Length: 305
Image (tube, rainbow, N blue to C red; front, side, top):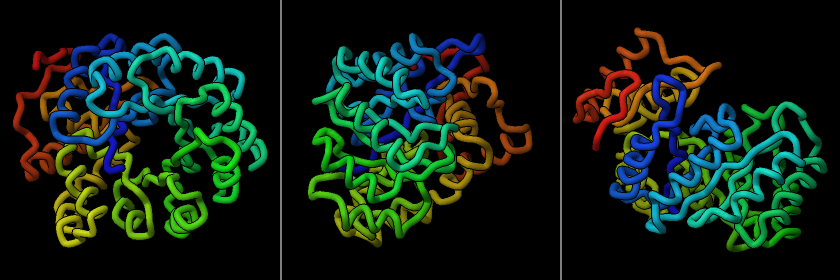
């Protein structure tokens, strides 16, 4: 399946969504050859968007993509009732190809609770495909491989998982245990090649916001068993991949995009921009990688692309 971008949601200084910058970022991704785009995931600060804003952002991404690449819509909530209300809207948005939904956060449900939660979502949005999103570091609970297999067998529209547990043995178990055709994606840029090595089908990437062509090239090389090329690209961009987590995601990636002239670095509370020292380190790294080809956008401004 390849490489998808967990796209940021750019904001203006007044906290509103910067629609112009978001459209430009979508076009940048597609023109660079990215395989699909994920709107309103954790990198898109979905947890800070109210319902109307979330729908607006998804519509912008789907409309701008215009069918050129698949668009997955992030849709996560720790109340199953609320999740189903949100998800019902996605069936009405042209261009949404799939729903990406993370474990219910804070509640720490059991495996049976997660099973019932995701099964209810799948039934609510059918026949729209569902991608499970296992990210225990943010949600406090792991989605065990046995539960993923149960869900895959119970709901034919549950067709993929974004696996961000950081556990390579768990990823390997998923690739061995799931039905043929079920897709496993790494949710961690720094584990993408290792995950593909044990059978994963691609990556949902943070770094692709900044370097979509290069991340796409790396993943396609690995999937085509061109490991020399894939490892060379990983080696070149490993520092950027790590730097994107020098602070809470997506603060560093927004800072780099700002330095590239693509959007403001504004994030919504409780997140705050990186310190001046971290910003300086990010600027130096971006410069060394040849990313600073645009004039930085003043804070709160929306560049005309």
